Length: 359
Image (cartoon, rainbow, N blue to C red; front, side, top):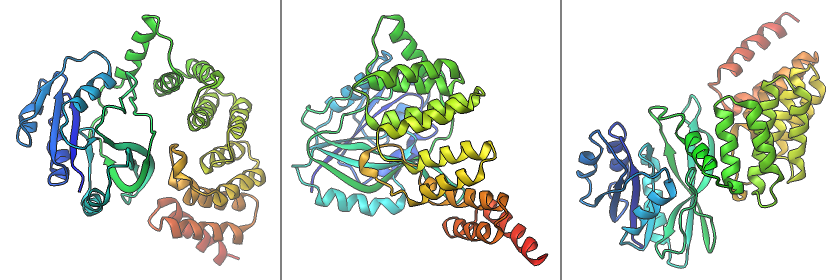
């Protein structure tokens, strides 16, 4: 069995830290806590689980803090978590199985990161993250914001999930302010930094600025394919929110330059055509979404509902608008197979029961 150091960077996390650390109790071999300036009970809570609590002066650089935390690790592998992450009970046994079977020729374990959930508690947004990294100093963190260890070497993909269970919004301006500080200092952003800077502008509803920033990113030759596809989707949203529906649609089609259509893209295209009343064309794209295969190994963000429930429920709407009631009902039934408790499915079910009885 390999050994694991859990390495965390924290600041003012008293509301969630005990939940996080109790969820990994018995799974890791040591816990390294690096505090970046807490003024609450974070350090006191951490000391209940480990005596390895260190201070690190915050310098607006997440990678620097994480590298410092990793430098304190003594085990064969390092693992990172944020304070609002948990390993849920159903994943604990699988985690131990992973730990028991992992061999030292693996450089990085990519694990599922569930970051949003539907009303039934099922993941509605997830992607793979580098989670367990061999402790040999050859895999440094990079990036002042949205820090990353570039996956390289021998990778293992695991379906053991980490669940991101936020309780509060945190500081919504922190990341954008860091990027603005870097730019003010004359920093030329890397492709990845430019991409995430563009996202921050979008989150702050600075849509014209975001369109321009995404355009810069898309012009860079070294941008990651998955980020370019996502940049097209987010640029499209910006255009739509500023009343430029044609540009929004063209940006979605631009994503097809980079790879085969993702269900996420097909659903966005379908939505664009629905908004303009072109239901037959919209149905084509939602049917295409249903035919798409989820390929998690490409590493991009995944919205599982775009591969089943969303296109099915939207096809129900499209065919009802086109007067094909039986076909619309069939797609609503299909949507119900995916999410039997979804309010839209249940509403439509009553609608079709009443409509078909009247005929």
